[in-house]
Length: 158
Image 1 (cartoon, rainbow, N blue to C red):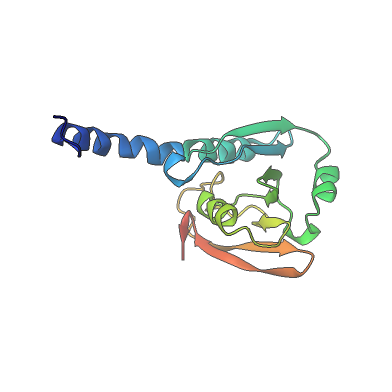
Image 2 (cartoon, rainbow, N blue to C red):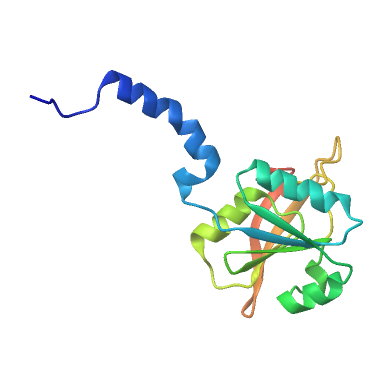
């Protein structure tokens, strides 16, 4: 007679697989592909894309010399602009937004165009200026206005 239930070996194998599942995004649901548009001469945009790949995002990079047109097309307010513009899951991601804010946006699905980190804060992901400890906001923006969505110091939400 076959005994149902989990064996010690099966339990151990399942525990061993958990870090792999968490890192792949499977444990939290598959992440949609992100498309990043950036100027070919910008290095920090590549660093931000690499940071997101390391966090489990699938990232395609499209280089363009007409970033002004990209920002207008995606409805990024001029005072929230940064050096790169991305799209994921129907949202716009402007600038050096930490991955945790992007994951939260995709999970909560608020009525908005997207989120932005204005400018290029030295301690934000992709900038990673040694010794920088500045505080910066992630702004949710859309037709009904804007509001602070999150606040970070470096990569840590505060």
